[in-house]
Amino acid sequence: MEGTTMHNSRDKEISINEMLQSFLTDEALNDVTLRGTDGVEVPANRFLLSARSQVFRGMLLGKFQEALSSVVEVGFKGGTLRAVVEYILTDSAQMLNCKKRKSQEGRSFDYPLIQSFVSLLEAAAYFQLPGLVKRIRKKLELIWWSSPCSSFAILQACKMAEPKVPATLVEEAWRNIRRPFSTNSITQEHVDCLSVDILKEILTDEAMEKTEYQLFQILNLWAQGKESERLMTAKGLSQHICFGRIKPELLATTVAASGLVTPEQLLEAYKYQAFAAKEISSDVFSHKRNNPWMTHIQTDKIPTEIKVTGAGSRAVNGVYVRDGLFRGHCKYTKNGQFGGQPCVFWLRRCGAMWEIMIPDEDVDVPGAALGAKKFYFVVGGEQDESPPPIEWHCYEFGRGPVPKVKYRFASSGSGNNSDDSA
Image (cartoon, rainbow, N blue to C red; front, side, top):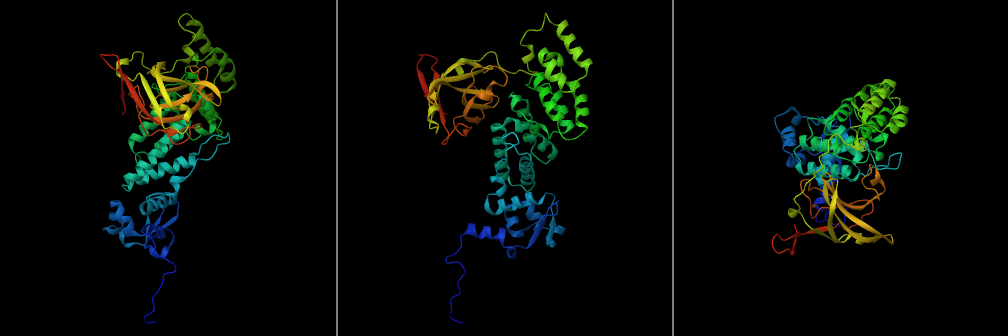
């Protein structure tokens, strides 16, 4: 009726964010359907997609046949396409907020989620969405640094997506596999996804910072998969392991019981150890194929102290003093208390990651870190003997806010110390 004011069903005008959100739920606002390789269809608005992605602009508004069609076939699964559309409209996506499920052993691991992240990364790179690429890479970094065993799944997913994922991501996945970490925490689920080709690459990699027994553990876990032919395949792959560099007591028990080695292989290993008894030291069995740890450090170019402040787990705050080496790199320590008990906090580097933690009593024994209490970690500083000052993350025992660090260097002339916050 003339003169009557028409009201929306809402009491107030919707915001821009609410408007964009409505394109995800109200199909009447959309004019194109993206169909994934699995047949799942995702409604979208071609103009909004084109406004943020030049690839979508060329596809949906250009001279391609897709510009004339209401249904467009796109080479990604429907779930991935839905996440791309969500990100374009809202700067976020439900997939980015997914949490890892717990494995059967109670550890956080989710290979399907890792596959989804890598697939979304592939799509983000294809549609030229650098912000989304950065978000997903950060997600993957947090996964492999909080759970190093997940590196196997990330490597496999990246290799399957080559060459559509950034080559730097594949290289980083390989570096994480090579870095030393306890194989005692690896489960069959962690390595089950590995293809034969990738597993062979791991076993034959001369840059691997793992002992021969640790490589055998990986192979043995993989062999326990559901496929009936795995055991036979694993027997063939066992030729790439130097069993002569595995302790005799392990050869006679765990290795022999695995069913992966023949009596002839065991005999050759024992012969190797017998003939080389004079040359083999007792610690040769713990040698890694590649041991890059430094033996000499220019101590005048690294901090004498590191001050940790602002951590939500207050016990870690304080001044850490340079205190010798851990695996060839400087470590810093401070005395304190945790849980009402006196302890020594470490600030140490492992590969490209720095950690604030309370170590096990015997930190040099492989696997001993399983009982360590880890509070915070930061990725970076791989070439340095001091950690990055910011962008730390919480471990199991850490509470927000995360810490910041400042460095104190010894003055070259007077011997006085000077604060130098990076």
